[in-house]
Structure formats: C-alpha cells, structure tokens
Amino acid sequence: MQAITVVPGQPDSVGVSEVADPEASPDLLLVEGRLIGICGTDADIVEGYGWLPPGKDRLVIGHESLGAVLDAPEGSGFAAGDLVAGIVRRPDPVPCPACARGEWDFCRNGRYTERGIKELDGYGSQRWQIEPEYAIKLDPALGDCGVLIEPASVVAKAWDQTERIFARSTWRPEVALVTGAGPIGLLAAMMGVQRGLDVHVLDIVDSGPKSQLVADLGATFHTGDVHDLGLEPDVVIECTGHGPLVVDLATVVSPAAVICLTGISSGTRSVPVGADQLNKEMVLENTVVFGSVNASRANFEQAADALSHADVGWLARLISRRVPMSDFTDGLHKHPDDVKVVVDLRA
Image (cartoon, rainbow, N blue to C red; front, side, top):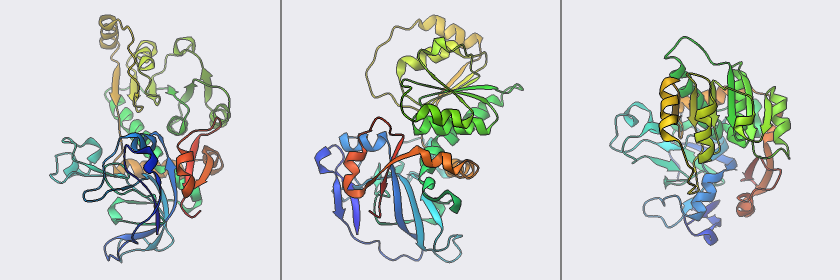
C-alpha cells in the first residue's frame, strides 16, 4: 500500500512510498485511511522536528486522521463502516503517575510517543491499524469534517482546563477573546459560542474567508492591536504563539481572567517588558496564564461531542483545500485563502 513518509529534517525526503500492508491482528482495528489534516507540526517535522520509529529509516507522517473501519475485534464496540479518528499520544512505558491514569497529555518524564510525530508511524497511509482504546468513533453525519477532531481536541482541552480554573471562584466568564483565526482559533471560537459566551476573534488579516466564518458563528471579528479593541475579556484562548501578544494580553484582561496559551512561538523575538509592573498587575488581579498541549482521550471525546453539535456546513467551510497524497508537500505551503488543508488518502 502507499503512505506519505519522511525522514525528519530532510525536506527533500518527503514523498509517497510503498510500505507493507498491516499484518492481520485479532486485537486491532483495521481502518481505511480517508483524510489527514496538515498543520504547522507537519511542516516542523519536515524541517527537523520529529523522531523516527525505532529500527525504521522513515516516518509515516500524519497525526490528524479520519478513516472508516474495515475490520474490528469482537466486543471492541466498533464495527465495519464506523467513522473513526485516532488519538495521537501514547503513554510512556514506565509509566509516570499521569500516564498511569490516562493523562498522557500531562506526561511527567517526556517518554510518551505520538503517532506521526514521535517514534510511531502516523495515519498518512491507505490503511492503518489502531488499538480500540485509542480510536474515537465519530458521528457519521460529520462525514469528511471528522478530520477536524484532532485540532478540535486541542481546544477542547484548553476550554476544559480553563473551566476548571474558573471553578476556583463563583463568578463565571461572559466575554471571550480568541487570538488567531486559523483552524485552532476558529474551533476555539466555535466552542466558546457553544458555551454561550460573547466571543471575539482577533487576527492579523481581514481578507479571505475567516472574517465571514467568525461572523457566521455569531462572534465578532477584529484586526489590529489588542489594546484598541475596547475589550476586557474574561477568558483568552491564545492560538498564535506570538510572544509579544502574549505579554500584551496579560495587560488587557478583566480581573481574575484566565489566559490559555495553545500556540507555540517559532521565532526568537525579544520585547521590553515591565516585568515588575506586570507581576504586580497579575497578582493583584488574580490573573492566570497557563499553557496547554495535546489532548487525552477525554478531550477527544469532548471534541467529538462539540463537532456533533456544530453546523456541519460551517465545519465543511474550514476545509478549504484538498490535495492528493502526491501533493502533500504543496499542502504544507498555505495559499492566501487556506484555512485547513487536508490530504485525500484515496486520491
């Protein structure tokens, strides 16, 4: 069968390769690969981030998955034809206290593995196998939009952790700001609207489909400087990884606000910061800033539920471009109107 493979750190190595068919197993789901999503992590793997599976010289890429079950173990809860996606991270072999409790997204020793990223082949192949406990059954009405579950799981965790922090007091947030209108930001905005919040989305460009996608959620789209928005958000889901913006956010939020950071900075920017004043404001205002990465099974299930309650037509508009397996490299390079690029594993 065919798969998209790469040697991490060797951009010229990306391509479609012939790999062995999955060996029959009575304990694993056999899945027909339909789509994989492309995100910045995939580009990072091509450029150098990522780890080969032990004993292999190439990595099957793809961590945002969608497939249909071809064969399922008896009693697994799955059946042929089920629409499924695969969880990305696996617990470390020790395991650490977090991994031992199914919270591998909080792995304490860094020995976790991740499909398509770290020491495990991904989902970018025509067929793949998965343990039932790491597969998520999706609402069949989602169709191809089910490929959005992995990015949705990231913000499902962000919202879940944010709400846990708000539980420290009796008041509840009303105004939410999402910074960045990529797929993660748009899904974060969707989940904020689902929670009944007054949602605002800030991005650097106002061209393309993003502003209308935000408006069609019932949220408000902004560009420009965060200080000029006239907002004091109670909660911020930060999806850009832009360091200077992260610092600015701590100065514009309401008292007792929560800021969740989901973006990863790729640059080496230095900005002058009045650290003492910022510290004083955060202490006196009970501000919480925290980071969130990856997702547990519970977060994937939360994401599946959120997608099932979303407007499928709106979700479908997030998938702005499809490429065949042979054009995976082209999919790494965003076009001006791109939101989410996916690879069709059947083409």
